[in-house]
Amino acid sequence: MRIKVLYNENEGLLRIPAVLWTPHKRIVSDIVIDTGTPVTILNHTDAMLLNISRTKKAGLLRMGGNTYQSYIYNRFEIAFKNTEGKEVREQITIRIAKPKSNKIKELEKLDFFPNLMGLDFLNKGYKLVLDFKKKEFYLEK
Amino acid sequence: MVNTIELIDSYARDLIWFQNNFLEIQSKFEGKIIAVKDKKVIGYSGNLKKLLKDLQEKGVDYSEILIKTIPSKGQITVL
Figure 1 (spheres, rainbow over the protein chains, first blue to last red):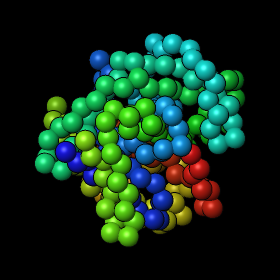
Figure 2 (cartoon, rainbow over the protein chains, first blue to last red):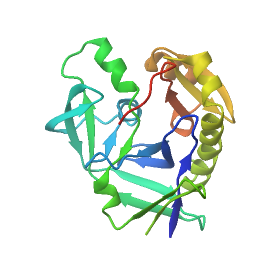
Figure 3 (tube, rainbow over the protein chains, first blue to last red):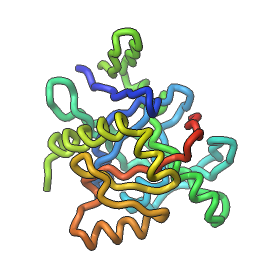
Figure 4 (cartoon, helix red, strand yellow):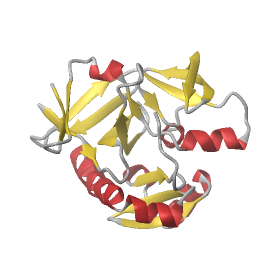
């Protein structure tokens, strides 16, 4: 089973379209593959759109030169479309970064971070194929 | 309610359009949050709450469209 990854050198990010679910709400969005992060991170904008409020305080996250307080949310699912046109759904515990203060600049900086698919997600049995020569980008399970 | 596969298909079309036109979009909307539907920018603002309010007033369901914050020119996203 394969899930297509979208890549365009203009933007330079590997994105997968997905539907993000909590028990109360769903939104369509995308998630950027980041093998440099051990955990999967939901960005500030999507956390707001999903109205996620009840979270458990976790460790500090260092992103883009800034340190943020992270919160854990475990009632979260991601749905993808595989290359056969079927829905693939995975449950994953995510982290949400919040500023340590209410300064508007800190909030604005967080808006620029996309959702990040970390190694914890890939470790659910996925193979990541990135062939820039053949322009083939996909996850396989 | 639109089903998951239809929602992903529609979003993927807009995401590909967004990626292909990223440099042009960035030159027009750097630092803003934009909403894209059917390969068109249907709204933008410097503030997410204001953008969501504008979309609601237009009768657009923000949970079913592409919403992206556009980094400034020369800003590279290092994750």
